[in-house]
Amino acid sequence: MTTKEFADACNVEKRTLFYYDEIGLLKPARVRGNGYREYDIEQFTRMETIKLLQSSGLSLMEIKSVLLCEGEGRNIEVVLECKRRVEEHINNLKDGLAYMNQRIELRECYMRHPGESVFIEHFEERPLAAIRPEYHSHMRISYLDMGHYLSIAEDVNTLRPKFFFKFTDDPHADTVLPAGKYICTFIEQTRGNGIYIPPLIEKFAFDLRRDGYSIDDTVYVEELPPWIIDKRDVFIIRFAVRLADDI
Image (cartoon, rainbow, N blue to C red; front, side, top):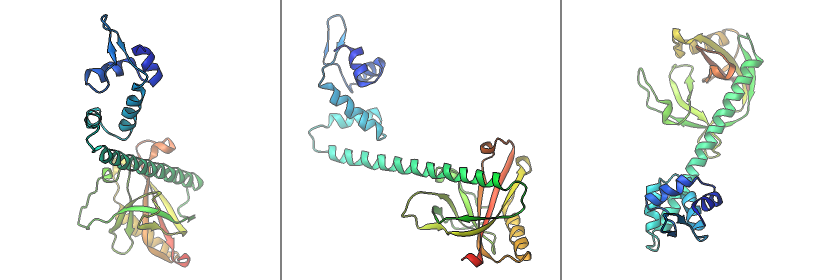
């Protein structure tokens, strides 16, 4: 079959086949005297193999190396590595979905309580992927370390992070957000003014205790991306602390 017919059958562009030929990944079965390439139906299997390996994250050069090693007994190792990469990619997608779901829930919470200084929400238990760095003054941690924006579990008494976290769907996570009733508040400030969280948490906890609330020693701090609510140049965070009577 012609290059176009083979490309259409494989659902790829003709230029993809030209490039695969150029790098020696998938050459045509024959090249006519006039330069026209022809492919055989048996080459569908090779194309499907290339697609499968590529979907697992292997580069074209890695795929070429794999296919050149056919018959040398090492392909099972490559397949197992591809499987590991696919599983890792799936887990990353699940974490991304958990992140988006939590930010949607955070937005809905924000919209339910316009202008309220404090309010109570019931949270179900949720697994958390946590980082527990050794604390030091002026500590910084990159959001890129875990792939998505991190939230903070702050110690009310020391005003230091217990851990940084993101929500996950991993049932084997060793940290959870405990179920229960939480008293919450949203803090909204212009980004240009900067924001330093510990004094705000200290005031939040002091005001709650002054008003007679008995609270846990951990405040969960989450940022609400302003673009989700069509705002600009603002910094919006939610403080949530579990009521001790619900522990």
